[in-house]
Length: 260
Image: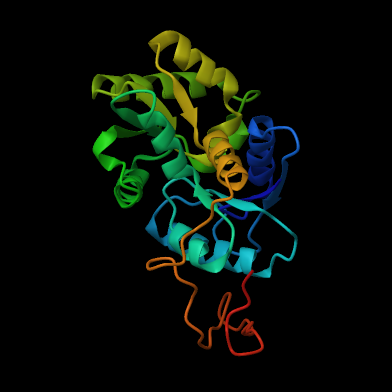
């Protein structure tokens, strides 16, 4: 089985961290390939970044010519998953809804621990669109920026990371969370910090990257993929200009977008 994992930003080091987490979760016989957009934001932290990222991820998948059986979108709360489901003919699993769905199997209400507080509204909207917002007790920011996660990690200022995570987790628990969800793909490598949170608070913690990989594997194994009836029908044939301003249009032989 071949899974493609798309980073939502242009930071290659973060793609590598995400791929390590995805491979650790993948079963025997599953290969994981990470894709980094050639253009877009270096980190997605707000509405502008997210919409730009969505277009870049779509363009990256459109031009990727390697074989794959499923796509995992590694951007928590980011836009684009619906467009990708129209674009490709394989299952598409977004880490936001994957983590939330698994969390709902472990407790009545879950809390999301994310990076900056400014991402709260965007994440809440994404959970609402996925149909799991009613089970979310709180979305809490740690105050750590996306790129800081890679800098701190396991070898950086571990104490600062731990303090920020535990404080955010306590706020989520006090709001009614019985399960915690990591609200950023870049958090997939913070295993030691996650263990500290689990030990101190006794709450299970769901990593969205790992959750999405296992769900993608399940969908492929079951022979299931996106429905083409209604919402996720194939895109209408029309002229489209892809990529940033000035980029040439990439069209199929009959004027349709080049899709898998």
